[in-house]
Length: 310
Length: 271
Image (cartoon, rainbow over the protein chains, first blue to last red):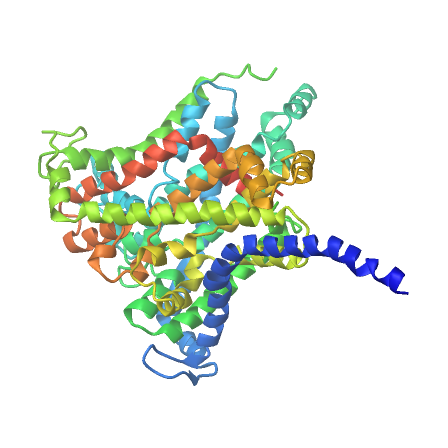
């Protein structure tokens, strides 16, 4: 008995121990990233949820609030305005993507200097958004902004338009700046899709007598569907989170004309120190985000979930 | 058959798009160097009386060097941690081990949480850690990014298995396998991560806005926004400041454009 049993633990130990050691080592490798994501992703989501059902401020003990904060939001005009503006900004993403698709088709053509064009169009994307906001404030300036100057020179308007101080024009102006910054990024994503479309397909279709428009709708569009949807998802995520641009260009004004959910969360939390109400808005924001992701996922038949994974 | 179409309309359209993309830069650059009253109407198309006055004004009216130092310090912490942590995590994910699926699921769902949706608890947590108003606190939320973990993972996956097995048979410890085999073969992943982490941290605005209290801790984007709120747009110095802030990011991007675009598209279109 002992003669049979005694080698067993040793050999098991020899196989197991290095493996456990390796597993442990791998967990150590994962630990720093995991800690950061726990601290700044997982815990915040849970804490937000808890906070939105409490009366709480930094100097007070927490008290259960039930649905009170959400009820307050229901009767809060600013909240509805912010939600509506957020939806408008999201709805503007397809405009930028359509423009970018046109540019991507042009840049994908077999022409000289395409890399130069690509660089120039992409240039605005990696720039600091705060600086982009200041650039566009200056472009939209009422007195000496280039846009008003051009409009007046060509007699399109009688009086200069105070774009960023006007209730009608402020939100569209911010959207223009946002599209200007994102255009290059959409183009790069679509270009990656276009480059996967085999040239032979086009040539074969052309020989069969298919016109350019036909080839575009029947060959190109279906084949770049994944990149198109990726651009939509990224565009909507960008639109829903574009805090910097709004904050610096208009600060949410005039009145609440450009208030979006993110700027409202910031103001509630860090200007009025109502952390609990801000948490409730954050939860609404989060639900909106998840539903967009879910909808995008359904449209692509589950492909968008694979976005940015292996 | 293909390639017989005329090229000039394409060039025409692209030059038009290029002008739309470049003119806003030009307009700000022009304002920042002109010596005349920036509110003169009609505005001049080319800068008149070119003068560096506004740049000098920026240098003396705000602690530009201090903001710059803060931005650089925070970016360095973020970039170094990012590359180290993401490489480690990416390496771990190339192996099979107990709990790997849970980790993958966690990473993928964390990707759905934008930073903007976490600001209040993130502020409170950083306060509990005692890191408010410090370089480390500014960099911490950006010290690891999921997209870049996957960039590293796919780069490590491409390293031939036989090479690693050979090293292991020779008795190389795990960290030396990473250091001497995996990392040298993943230069482009590293470059991608460095550039993305730098741009993200350099441009970050919301987090410094929330968590810095002292004027000494402000980073460049925050300094720029503060400058705007004190001075309104009334001085050309604002636009000089703008150009000074944009320049480093722009130079870095132009130098490493390929890696940058590769990183964004590989992070975004793999699947």
